[in-house]
Length: 246
Ligand code: NAP
Image (cartoon, rainbow, N blue to C red):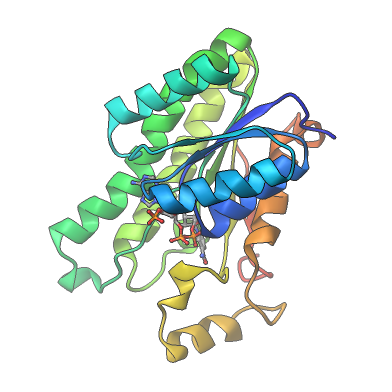
């Protein structure tokens, strides 16, 4: 299996796309660190990974809190002795029109989606730099490329995450660390379940392939960016959106 012997940390992997990414990396042979703020869902993912025959541990850290993130990375290195792959997946939305958006809505989304990824990248880069190898994969969104009405905070956080991906790629390339992003379009998870029928229909109309994507389809792109097949790629954004953005 292509990722046998490697250790991957996926933030926000108790459910949704993060969980699918963890399972797909495990199927490719990796051992996993599951991070989430919710203990029950994180531990359920760990049990599923162990059933696949992989080693997995749960780390209940809030990615916004630098001290918790540093402690998590230290715990990973203490347990596994290495960290090869970081997937910055934890994210949330607090939608509203720009003129009505509150400071709290803005701050929370920027904190989790962008500062969270910065905290994890900074902490994970240390063991990766020492090893002179590593893969960092950020889960952005097409909203960070095109913008999206009602998502000033979310699209700014994801656009920022794409810029962070490119800067990390430039700074870490000489240390053997590749940094890339995946930009999903409309994926069927709890995040998109909250949308009204009207908004869902509007999205589906704009997708050339005629359907929403699955978490597993995003996970497949992450497995590619974590493996040897993408060794000569860094600073790139892989769009997984059924053809919405071309
Ligand atoms: P989801 O089902 O809401 O899952 C998000 C996960 O992130 C949850 O497990 C959540 O934990 C965790 N999380 C939230 N805040 C956290 C924090 N501060 N620290 C650690 N974990 C935290 O969402 P999803 O649809 O799978 O989205 C995953 C990623 O894909 C996000 O970055 C999202 O922006 C991106 N994305 C999604 C879509 C889509 O259509 N679904 C499209 C483009 C991009 P709890 O369970 O405790 O809340």
